[in-house]
Image (cartoon, rainbow, N blue to C red):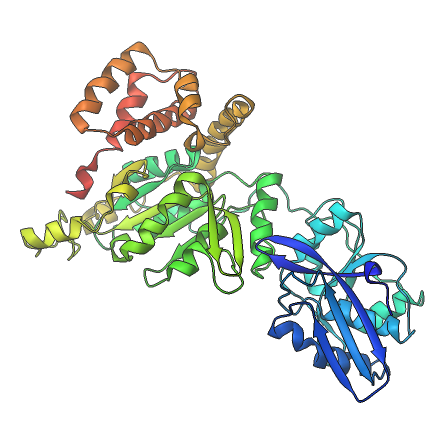
Length: 503
């Protein structure tokens, strides 16, 4: 019987790879092939793929075949255990012998090709922590190359791997290949946005401090265009942030990113709570986790179901979400910049310069109730986006506008000031500042304090709302290169907190 410690595969629990020891036994008797150790349907079906792939190597297996996946009480899921099972059986038939303990992963085609699978990055991190080499599909090599300090080999076919284990052929070593820190141009560009100077400024502040923002305007005012352009002014991902986002993408089988642009996930209002928050039988991450360290865009915000909106409150506040199911409990990161877009009323034309609003007072009141108060309390910037008239569009047609690269340069400088305070405050950006650190690091001038006190009572700000004003004011000061927060920064932050855009 093969030694289990020599041949290891993996199974996924959330974004974490767990080791699975694979051992096999072949005895005489009528043919049977059983896989034990809490396999799911995909793992049980591996026996047919493994048999056909081994047959391509002229390895015929017969008799009573048993494959054990240990630990026995850990559920195993997916097709990524095909390769270690095939290697275990090839060793059992004495066709080859493993050179030492290693991790194998990959799905087998019937002709012996090794197909890519999800979870290559968690597998590479597990191999690095255990100090073991990793044999991965050729299609996953680009992902594994993004993980530093792992010994990994690219496996195109089962035959190539078996010949390598017999010391008759060399496999291609996976070489680290991190994307450059500079960002290429991201479309759409802010140079494509005509007018809307208030909204452009608010989105710059949102990008600089990672603040949640609400855009309210008539159809055709450019809300969606500006929300998509926001990705181009965000700073590139750092090494740590890049690895965080890479882990989540790999766990759901998405391809590795080609550069360090931050994630942008746009969700339709018909999406289910599970698709956004995560879950399912295998407890996969949802959109709020796939957007981690990037943008989560909810267009037509008022059309989303209330239960789904309320489910987002906790992950937006805490920066992580815990998904509890019968199969277990998994925690995913969910530090997102939330962008909401909505029409000003049910018909969409309230306050529009060209169209007449047809909503009655009752319809307006019913529409306003769709804006969840607790959710809006977690939004830092409220912005009105008026639709431009044809005359304004023509007049602005030839006006030069700042590009995303120019705005991003200012955002990066502001972020660097925040990163300089990271060791003292324990936060990557101003939106993540705790209440204690906010009071200590805000640097509020006496004039700004008096002005804020008077305006807070007039605007009826809650404690959370007041803290969000202070965080935005700190970001405005960072954009201006100021050490302290003056009354001008507070006044601008309060202007973006005015809920009048919803009236």
